[in-house]
Length: 436
Image (cartoon, rainbow, N blue to C red; front, side, top):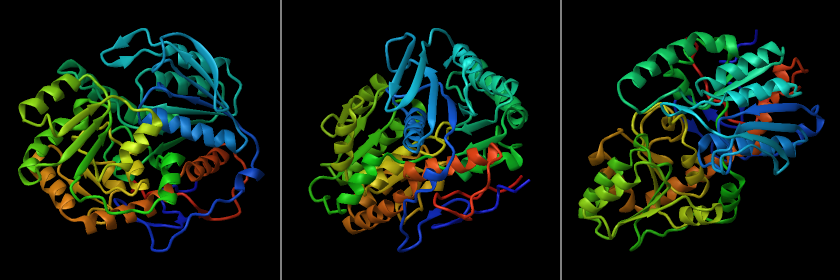
């Protein structure tokens, strides 16, 4: 069997932790997909747009690109983001079947109807997005019973933020996944090398594992392609956070850091875009820290308004704690595409995307003082911000969904026993993963 751990030839140079875009590299769109067979692809995901999050955004953009390349794509998912009910609808050419989330175990929805629907479907390949306890295993098992190739994109380890018994369950479940995953799937995809190398669940994936990163939406790349990175720091000093207001996102640390930054830069402004169960606590903390005039809490924004929020920011911050829920950080790619420098926690996932000091800064998680120093450093150094923004824009071009979809098409073809591509050149950056 071909060893998938070697680094493929690309337009880019990589190492196992950082992404380095070669100077002068360009991204070319080819017409390889026109010569490929039309595939029937069944995607299983616990969530899908209009639900807001990294996995649902990824599944939507990948599916849309595959449809544009002539494939038939069905997504079986939950009705999260809509009124709880059954739906069968078309979304940008994607056939979408939704089942309501009725029951939960701890924080995990029980979604067996989604998995059972797979049994009824006619498809060439089953692509499961996980890990979601119960759903991932059952859907993959049904794919096995139907004797169809099964691909699992491993977005993150199963993790629950509740206390005591749920944490014990997390440890036990991830230990089981470690042994069951290679049996459940024909191939496994992780999105970054640093995350894969530190995941218990992926530790026995062996040669079935490859790395294909998540992508960035075309609206962000389009903006980056038509707008230069310009100086905008004078008298503004605007920070932006985008994400769910959950503990693992580290917004508490960001607010504590901002109280330090305010001592150096009184006019600093932070927009927090997103909703979640931590919002009331975070609003209270912001008020207690005397940040009412510096912090704006915004709910989830429509796509056009979110794009405008990125545009009006100077620095984007992703201060996630050392959680297993942040396998890449799509917000990082979105910020880079818009020409914005990013400050993120040095944890598995984000540390594979940001090259510290070149297109952003990495700081220790849960360290408000270090985070504050990084923010002050960038906000007081406009030239550095501009250079990082330009470097980030160049890097983001390698993460378009055209390229990501093409890489998945190649993997689908390998799994289906299709003829290998004549070319050894892959246009999508694929991170090197060390074999264990």
